[in-house]
Image: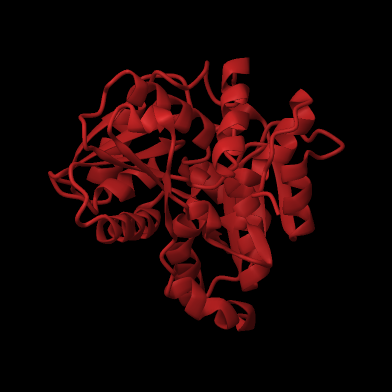
Length: 328
């Protein structure tokens, strides 16, 4: 059963450090700051391109735990365009697990590119109403799932749990070692469930300030981050803030200015961004830099968490042509 995961185990366990790419632009030199992109979007297996970036970081120790505990099936949760659903399906195929995705809402045919690809990777899609989906953390709902599917290893929505924080802490450690001589240091990341950011900041001390850019509307993200740290008994001496000014109306919402920015960013640096997470973060980051938020001499590391698989569905849904990979 586990021959597949054993074949890739060394790569999974000994995750190679992803590069830092420094950007060069007038809007950076004019403010005397340096901006580096932590290219975690390049962290992937060639045979499983949807399993990449922060999904690799979050799933790494969950996959190892599922194997160690003798599970053959992984069950998780997400919406119709979920990066996490896509990544779990790809990881399951790569490492030899059956996968089940509990999808919020009714089935819509034809399937969008995210769900079609998840199904092609062997994931069993099970749709539940939005009302029932909100019960996903309740004991009775979990019991019902076991009655339907038997034994499985559960990964929460977005992949955020104690093991996910451990994997994302490693991401922070990589950054810290790569920029050891670059102070003052600022680190930024997009936020969905908040697990990546929570794990990331545990790797830094008081010499670093981290900024999270939520993709969702609302003032709840700071509370979620603190809850992650408290629940999973992690701590961070780094200073950190959540900037709620660049969600563009909420999850999957956008404005023409965001699309224009993403295309210009790609043309300038050949780095594709996704419109749900990284596009909004880099848009906000540029605004903050131009507004003089960062002191002169600041070194900023922006984490590119991936999320590029969702661009195809976004383009189809809104009639756009955003790039999803580096040009040849």
